[in-house]
Structure formats: structure tokens, C-alpha cells
Amino acid sequence: MFFVCLSGLAQCVNMASLTTTSEMFISKKYEGSPQKLILVCLGACLGPLSFGYNLGYSSPAISEMMKLKLLDKHQAGWFGSILTIGAMMGGPLAGWFIEKYGRKVTICFISVPFLLGWTLIAFSSNHLILYLARIICGVGSGMVCVACPVYIAEVTTKSLRGLLGSCVQLSITIGILMAYLLGMRFTFVQMAEIGLIAPVVSLAVVYYLPETPRWLLLKNRRLEALKSLASVRDAHTDIEEECRDIEEGLADQEVTFRDMINRQELKRPLFISAGLMLLQQLTGINAVLFYTVPIFIDSGYKEQSHWASVIIGITQVVCTVFACWWMDKAGRRKLLMLGGVIMGGSTFLLGLYYAVKEYDASMVANLSGMALGSLMVFIIGFSLGWGPIPMLVMSEIFPSQARGKAGACSIFVSWLSAFIVTKEFITLKDNIGPAETFWIFSICCFIGTFFVWIILPETKGKSLEEIELYFLGRSMLRKSVI
Image (cartoon, rainbow, N blue to C red):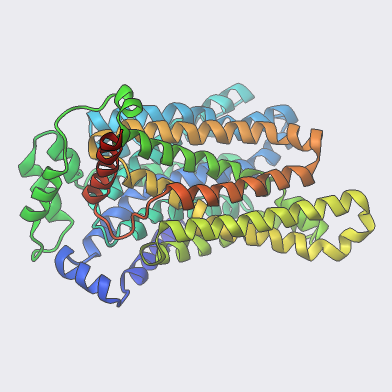
């Protein structure tokens, strides 16, 4: 199953890379054929696959653990959400790791917490060991969200960065779907044992991947940087010229956390990235997924409600493939705004459904199709924009010397907000009602759309150095005005 999903991912990327527009033709002429890049990026996407499998694992595993009396209802809630606590630690750890030891070494190291976590779950005897295992897996998950997008952004060409960078989210959705499907056939112990496969394969594959040329140049290892570029570009590509372009965009000084607060060219990208991560969670994605099974049951599919998660997983994969395909055509801003409007409208309708249900339960049967349709449309909107793009933007808008620390800050905001939203959702729903809760999420979706329209610059078709110069130019303009 693992290799089937990986093969499907490769085919999706290959299909998208065969675009025949003049822009892609010109990019291929000067940047080289994408085949080498595709193989390298697929290898890097094995980490996100493990992350996705971890996310999807709790859904089928918790019910079995509760039946076996390993967890009670309260403990089950913590088992599902405690992953975020580990991820909050993993983000800053990865930020330090990728700057000191490199992007490649960090991705190799990510396999360690996944292997340890799954081993503990497979041999767990009480809920405390299960908690520890989930925290350790969470550390690996947080590290994935920083290291893998940065690695892919730094090895790809500007014409393929959106497509290949979005494959991080595509790999996550494939991992989630794998967990849903395997959960219908295997026990939670067997699923943990299967979970050991991806990190082992990832460790073996990533060992042979090149380090990113930008990190090597930051460490004054120019010859190795040229070899790295040669390994991901065709023979006719002028790697010496590309290397010089990268060198011109690198700063010698090390960036501190204080610099990110005080320097405008770093502060604005950090505000954009952290804002996107926060708004991604405030869209209510976790709450909507929480209501998947009840909505299926209310819509008349009680006997098939166990397929609800699988259907959602398939929808996420298919729509993320489409988003990958269009990322470098439509651009980040358009897909985010389109996704935000779609999600805002669908959560408003979900709120309306629960308001009617509370007012007159007899009318629910006539509106069940609207609830199910709104749920599916929300997942489509999320997968088109707010699923893949925030991590992609995070990997693009920071200068090389700041990507570790800045990415760690953004991922910390993401996981902290995910933990708060997940834990407080039930309280919010019980105090003000599900209808009002979904309407709050709807407002947040439209706020996110407005945020993108006002704040986020388009990064489609720009090199990482051009994006860095854009923010530096904004900073210089601000200083001259002041």
C-alpha cells in the first residue's frame, strides 16, 4: 500500500510537469528537465507521509483502544490531541537542527522519533505509554513541517517550486488516507507496526539525497554546492550561474530571534507566515472533521458512516492533486482566496443546518443533503488552498539564513493554535451551540481571505532570491519614508 501511494504521487507530479505553456517551456530550457527534481522531492516527501499516517492513525485506533479498556473517554481525547504538544517542541528543534546540521541530516533524523513512537505504541500496556508515544511522534511531526518544505523549496527551480512544494501536503493527505483504509482491516498494534515502514524507507532514501546548495553556500562549501546543483539539474543547465545568483542573495551574518522582531525585512514575512498558520486552524478544519460521522448519519447513511473518514480522505487527496497542478498557474493568492470563500460559505451553511435542527428537528431530513454537501465542499476548499499553501509560503518568503528560526516560529504558532482549537471546540460548542460555532469559523474563513488579499504578495514564478529582495525593498522603502 505504501509503495502504491508513492507511485501514485510520482505519476501526479509527472503529469503536472508535462504542462505545455510557453512559460514552462522557457523555464525548462533554462532550468533543466524536472525528472531529477521529481525523484529528489519524492524522497523528501516520505517524511510528510509518516506525519500524515500519524494524523490519521488516531481515528480508527481510539475506538479499538476504548473497547480494550486501554483508554477511557477522557484519555481518548488526550490521545488524539497530545500529538500537538510534541509538535510544538518539534518545530523549534527542527529550526535549530536545519541551521546547524543541514536540511538533509534533519530529515534523516526525523525518522528516529517516528520509529521510537510507533515501537512504544506497538508494545504499550497503559495510557501513559501511549501518551509518551504520541508526544514523541508529535516531535517528528513538528520537525517534518519545518524541514521538508524548506528542503524542497531550496532544491527546486522557481517554475516547479509551487507544484513540488505542494506535494508535502499531498503526501500528508495520502498518509492520512492510508491510515483510514488500513484501520478498517488491521488492529491498532498492527497499524503501529506498519507505521514503522515509512520512516525506515525514508531514512534509507534520504541518506542518498543531496544537501541543499543554499545551506552549503551558507557554510562556505561552494564545491559541494555545485555538486548538489549538478545532481538536481540536467547537464545543459548553467549551474555556475545559478550558484552565483544564490551567493548574491545570501547574507553573511547569522539571524537571531531578536532580528526577526526588529528587522522589517524579516518581521513582515514572519507576520505573514504566522498569520496564515493561525488562520489555517481558525477555519475550523478539525471541527468539521470531528462532525464528519454525525453528518453522514444525519444524512441517512448510518450503515455506511464508517466510510465517512475514507471518503473525506479520498476527497482531500484528489483535490490536493488538483491544487498541486494549478499552484504555479493560478498562483498562491488566488487559490487561497478561492478556498477561503468556499470554506466560509460551506461553514455558514453547516451552521444554518444545525440552527434549523435545533429549532425544528423534523426539518433535518429535508436538509440532510445540504449538510453533507457543505461538508464535502468545505474539504474541497481546504484542499485547494488552505491545506497545501501555508507551509509552501513559509518555505518561500524567508531568507536562507532565517528559514530555520522563522519556520520554527510559524510552525509553533500553527500547532499551538491547533491544540487550542481542538481542546476548546467542545467547550465552545456546548456553551454557545454548534450553529454559532460554525458561524464563527465562517467569519474566520472570510477574515483569512481578506488577510491574503491585503497582506500576501504573489510568489508564483519568482526565485527565492527575488522574493527576498522584494521584502528587503519594502523594508528600505519604509525606512526612507520614515
